[in-house]
Length: 300
Image 1 (cartoon, rainbow, N blue to C red):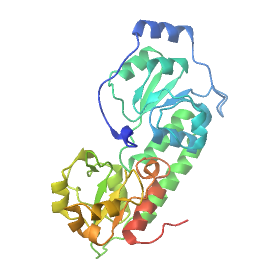
Image 2 (spheres, helix red, strand yellow):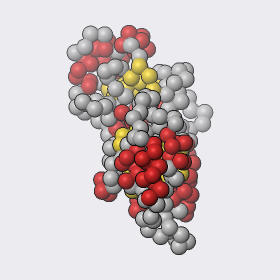
Image 3 (spheres, rainbow, N blue to C red):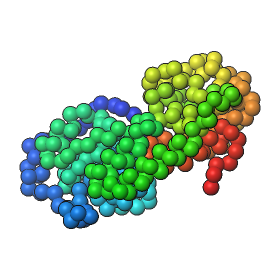
Image 4 (cartoon, helix red, strand yellow):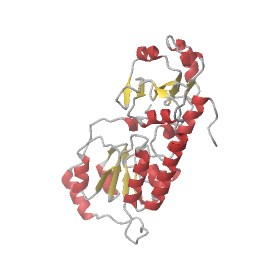
C-alpha cells in the first residue's frame, strides 16, 4: 500500500530524459498563455509539484493557471482535471515539457540539479518554503505574487495569520499541556520533531509533542523508546482504518500499559490530506487536533 505520507519523503534518485531532445522540444514549442491576467499580460502556465502549493493556487483563484500537478495533488476537486506530471517533488521531464510551463513551483525536489535543467528549458523554477506553520502565509503571498493573484493572496494570508493568533494558547497559562506522540506512519514507526509544521499544529492546539527536543522534522523511532515516554495522548495520522488504533494497541503487549491507551486517548479519525498538508486548510487541521486534546467537538 502506498503511504499517504509519500510526499513527506526526501529521497534523492531520479530519471532524466535526454537533455538534447528536451532542449529542442522546448525551443520548438514556446509557452502559450492559459488566460489573461488582470493587467492584460499573459497569465503564467504553472506546474505545481506539491499538494500544498496546488491548494494555495486554487484557493486564491489561480487554478486556471495550473497546467500540471503531482499524483498526490487531490484537492480541491477541480484539481483532478489538471494533467499529472509525476510524483511529489519527482516530475517526469517529458510530461512537464508536454504542458509547456512557464513556472515550476516546488517545496522540495528529489533531484537538486533539476532547477538548472528547468532554467535551460526556459521554465522559471520557484522553490517556495512551506515546512513550518509560520511559512504558510508567506508561501501564500509568494504564490499570489507569481501567479498574478496578489490581492486574493493577501486576504488569505491575513486570514491564516489572524486564525493562528486567535488560537494561540493563552499567555501565562498554568495548566500543563498534555504530552503528545504523533505517529505519521506505523511500519516503520515514524513521528515528527520540533522543526515540523505538525509539531507547530500540536503546540497551537494546546499540546506538547514528546519529541520537542529533537531537531529533525520526520524520523523513525523504536517502540521501546515510545513506551519509555508514556505520552498522555497518541495521535495516529496514518491509520489504515480510522477508529481501530485504540483497540489494536489495547491488545498489544507494551502499548496497553501506556497511560494514553488506558485512558482511551488514542485518536486516529483524521484526514491526512488536511492535518499533514501545510496549506490553506491549516486552521481546520489545528481545530481537529485541538478538539481531541480538549475532548471537545471542533467548530463547525
